[in-house]
Amino acid sequence: MGKHSRFGRFFRSAILAVSPLVAAGAVSAQAVEPHEPLTPWRIAKAVNDSTAHLVHVASGGSLHAICTRSECDMFVEPAAGCVPGQVYPVLANSAVKVGVMPSRCVLVRDDDQPKLVVHIAKPGFLVGSLLSARDLSLAFPTQDGLMNVLDIRMQGAASLLRDALGALPAQAAAERGPDGHAALDAIVRNSVSRYRI
Image 1: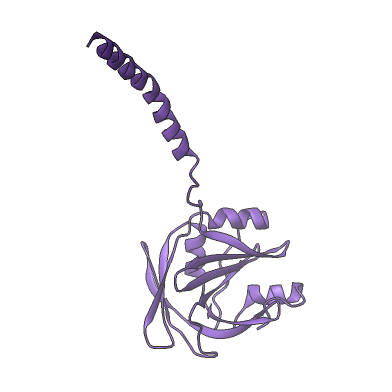
Image 2: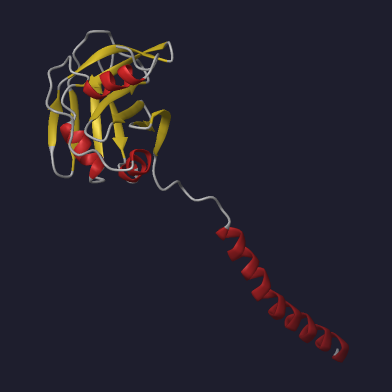
């Protein structure tokens, strides 16, 4: 029995000596796991030096911000599409404000690929939320009569804009009628094929 007890003590000592190394290995293995991105926003395309196109993809669609150093235009690209020319009331909900924003479904050509988007006519509230990192939800009707909701995290969007433009937009796009597309028009002037409405 003496032999077995010496072996038992040796075995326990070996386990105690190896345990911290195994635990350290487990900790380091956890440290290399990929982290969630800091922001769900990304630069969609490099339009030109003075215009940035950011996109936030969520279930049900995506929110796009096309900004110059002076203003931003915003639109939703519903996954289910929209009816061209149809007016869509978009309900915006954040911690500080709830409201309905007028919008309309328009056909946009992006590198000669047409797509239907819901253009936000008066995006001031959305731009303010983007620049101040206030998360919000957008709800809009779908073609089959239901409601689609996009949960938008604004974290990191302002930093991406600052990096792309060298500065943040001075102010939100001026309040316009449903046909106003100031930042989109600027892109058309500066690009041969991008975003023709």
